[in-house]
Length: 170
Image (cartoon, rainbow, N blue to C red; front, side, top):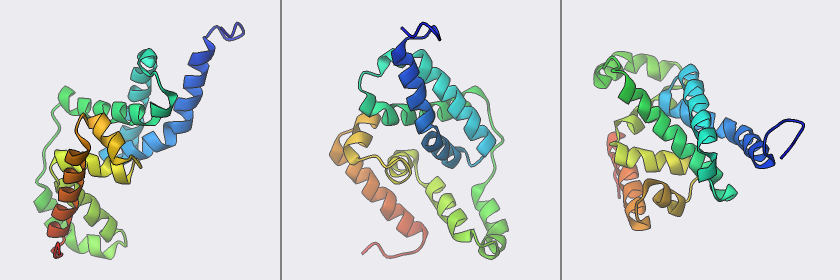
């Protein structure tokens, strides 16, 4: 125990680890929420939840995957707690289509909207791989799927993105 601070040394190490991973957690949450303020709230709640259950983390090497999973679940809790105003994504895209092409970030916004159109079962593994840098084995473990199931979902996610963009999947 670190007598000067009154906290176990392991707790101090976990706090340091959480702060080291915070930028990655925030980037993932920003992508999920598309709103930095909400993303910061999600990360803060996730870190609080992780701190309360810090004894559940047995392997320090799995901390990143563990924390990203908590962020993803905390984001999902946002929608359990309150009903958000629903908008028709197709209508917004069609209304702003001209603006998207002009603002320079049209490709990025178009890709984000295309990914948001994917069913969650395909979107989450794709985001975990692309944004989180997870291996298929890590994704399988976190989502409680087999590796072949993850590979299938990643393949289908990419195939659906190609279809959204009107590209041949050959």
